[in-house]
Length: 136
Image: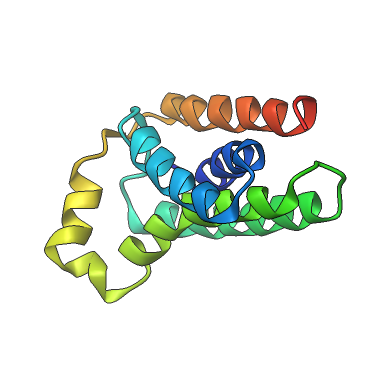
């Protein structure tokens, strides 16, 4: 699943939880739950690189955007967002990726090569944005 999906869903949950520590932990738990939902991931390395770069840019943009908005509990939002993305940051961008735990993280996810499954991420992002804006 896209880092943006994990960041916004973790942030939306963290915004409601309030306490940053609990929000961070809830973001981590939600990450593992969302990873079990079938989602798109490209097959070739070039497409993966492009998708990861765009995903990172959009994730930073949305987090910065919400920092400057009145969404209520910004500390809970940021803690939940960080919890939502920390798993992928550790499992994909560190040497853990080549270890058993990194391979477990990748293999437990139902990745589909059909672009149609990007709809899963779009749905999660949309629902997360609704929760962030309407229930602040």
